[in-house]
Image (tube, rainbow, N blue to C red):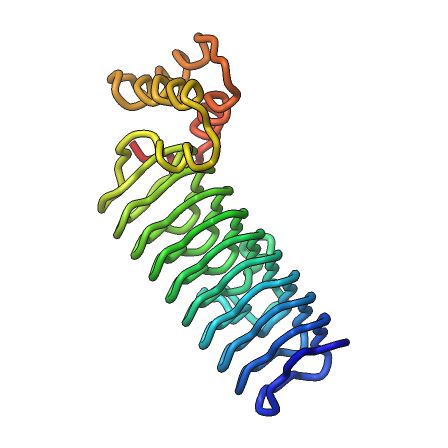
Length: 260
């Protein structure tokens, strides 16, 4: 192991596995069941514990707590896990809790995500890649978040919700149902405000793709149809892009119902 800097006050427990060029700051604590890849930077007072596996080139800012026990009365000390991919940034005072046996026992986070200060990711959450969570966004347990999702500051997501890809939640949004892909939602409680046009443009969606999603949105949210009737109409039309099928499949498979 080649470590560029491990501060003498840091506590690295026997059994911890650190990759090359890892930086560990003052008073950081790395638990005995932590496995960490190359190029990670761990700032002062960070605690990484539990059965936690971390990829390469992640940054953990001061007072972040990763892999801690879940805030769940069902948890009885089982060796559940936290898994984190590559190139993520965890800003100050973030908490990520490991999984529980009520689910698959894993909290997982993908790649290239930015989590701003005071974000909370609860037990058994499954997060994709290319996410941006602004300050104080919080997920309750068992939440699933697909790729390219943005949660603005103080967004709160109820347990067991699913957030579809390319969606955007406005400031102080409170989500108690699933958010379909491509949507812009806001409010307490959250309602839809159209397609996430700006986000889609940034990610390379062309004008025809966006126009088609707008037409599908009108069928679902502005036609007066029930959810089932809207799905039937979507299925009856011919669409040029695969996005509409992704949207209708998400709604059809939702267990909590979707935000409308």
